[in-house]
Amino acid sequence: MAQREETDGEQERERFADRALRIVEDGVYWSIAALLLTGSVVLIIAQVNVLLHLRDSPATQVMLEMLDGLLLVFIFVELLYAVRTSLRSRELVAEPFLIVGILACIKEIVVVSVDAANLLDKGPEFARAIVQVGVLGALVLVLAIAIFVLRLHRAGADHIRDRPDES
Image (cartoon, rainbow, N blue to C red; front, top):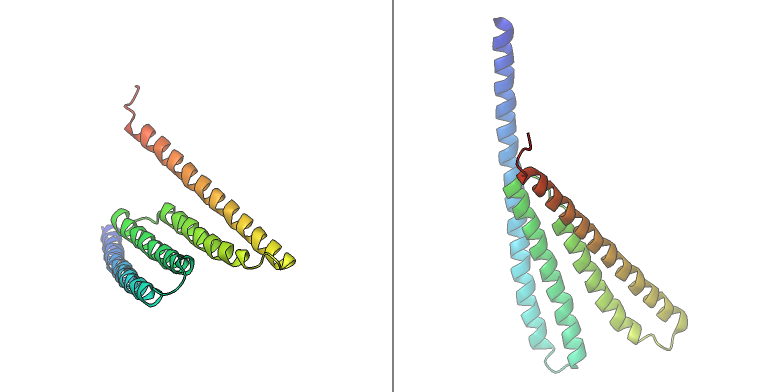
């Protein structure tokens, strides 16, 4: 009988520790979510400010600055989605982070491509920029394939789970 009371007490302590850690974990996730949301709003305001300050600049420079900033906003929003999904499902989901990787690669491709246009007459520097764009493009492809495989895996798992027993 004493053995059972000890086991019950131990299980109760474990449940209490689990609840306490879950509350702390949720607090951390909510803090991250608040910071990402605040960062997104600040970035959008900054982009409006950039647009106003660059109104006399060439259109290509304005568009590059806007695209660069807006892709960063997309990254923040996608990370916010990842945090929200983690809070809801109680598990870390890989897909939003893969999408963030794709967005970051695309952002860098845009920046490097514009810089490469200015390096046309500088052979080795231009070649390095083109290789960098190629590597980033390949990375986008790899990340997209990873997302596709994850979705196939999830669809297969959902199909198996939803299938009625054949017994």
